[in-house]
Image (cartoon, rainbow, N blue to C red; front, side, top):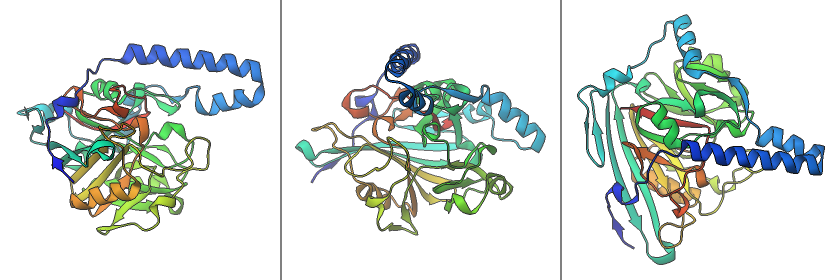
Length: 335
């Protein structure tokens, strides 16, 4: 077994792929529509549910500004965060955030696993923000993590829970309610810096905001609680809808862990790329989070969605191809 640290620049990739992605997406949708016309109503329903974009809020920035004005809420200014910031190849430090990124490689040959760790300390819980693909909320609205990050002047970003793939789950982002349909085990980030796993079906989005929740994530499962690896995580189904029944086996993974109030650790494990990184099971991911000191850890969307971004470039190498898959949301820190 070997373990080594390597600079993130070895796997950094160019960021500006918005136009190429949008063209590919339009081609896919057009082709899918053609198939739907050929095979009938059943496929048309599937396209409506899983492919065609349904926009509920077309300008999220304006919507959040309106909601903040109504409630009197405020958040850390991106301009303030950038002041006096110092950035290196693997770190960022400002008045509001300290980010340290490292690369870890274990094993050899086809058993090699490569993962990336972002150790993040923030001055205030609202420094960690969420953003939606194309600045819009709804279903099947996608954009690469890098493009969404660039749109929001992020110095650091990681893919979120791909909320737009499903129509259930509580979605609270940046203190604003977007969806209130509890269905699974969620993760709540509070404005006081605490983070907790909760049962979405026992509360409401409005109650969470009233209790001080800033962001929620709805994917899972929780993989570490009270410092211990959660039993039975290999058998969890996070959804009953098509295409996302199980998350078992050795896969690319994204997770967030809690070390202390306002001290988080994000882990991105690449996978499906023999010789570079085969991926890990949920238990393997939990072991990584535990080794980093996380007392709570939560699994996020993975597979081709698993993407970490830092200072204008990809940190990881998605599926060993360097090509990002569009997703619906990110967590980020502005630079």
